[in-house]
Image 1: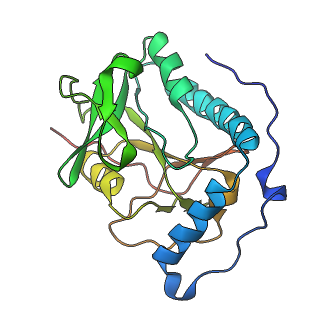
Image 2: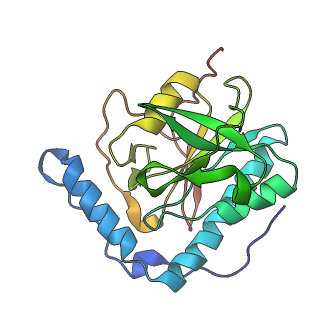
Image 3: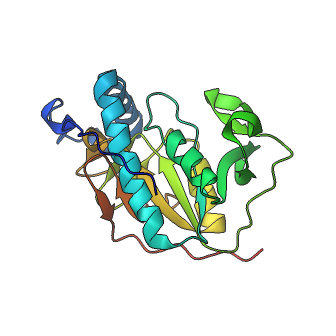
Length: 219
């Protein structure tokens, strides 16, 4: 198991706590504020935070057992970078998968090599190539899911396209929201189609939320 030991500066001492809520829980305003906050994290601090996040993710993976398939993501716009952990898990023989968009839907495709099995796609994201097989929607799966903001109840604010929400509603699986501590708010507005995260992972903690465990959908 990969271990990361570099200490991580506490980002909450660099950025003030965001306690105010936009009128009517305006998601557009929240997205802009949270993206601005994430983009402003100094690179050297973000790198240390990413190492700490990967360590929490590795500990969660270890607790779930060797048969759990792992869903990663391609980081954009200064999202926490889990790619080194994905490479390490593949070297250990774990099944790893990345999202691929199919119209308004999303599937996870299994890859063998991050450098050779991914290709540029929409929104600046690298996706698995067409020859990569789809990850079955039966069996234990842990998905690491980025977002612009989260709250301690597991609610997630994404970019507004709904790909991860639709996937989780259809396929189920275990979900861990990946974020920096300064992007965790007291409240994230959520609707009936929004899927809460089972865990919330930042550079400071791995929090098991009160969100229900998603059921596995049959093929």
